[in-house]
Image (cartoon, rainbow, N blue to C red; front, top):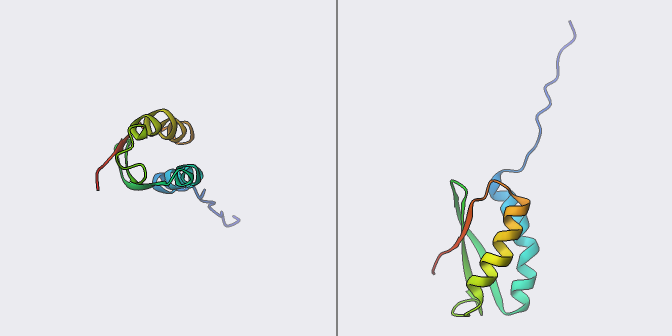
Amino acid sequence: MADQVQVEEKTPDLRERIEKVLDGIRPYVQGDGGDIELVDVTDGIVQVRLAGACVGCMHSMMTLQAGNERMLKQEVPEIRVVEAVPF
């Protein structure tokens, strides 16, 4: 009998997939003087930290929910919610 070769699929883990999406978002946030950093991922809840001009910006929560969360959920369906955590 011929040896069977098992092929493992190299699927990026959840955190890597989220970082990849954030890497696509980050230049736009940085263009406005801010930044976004992945803090933690637990049970479908993604925690991010907003920095720079995003801190104290009255539009940051709207941007987080309407833009960043929407893009993350679209690319990583396991995500249930995106939360901003303070410094």
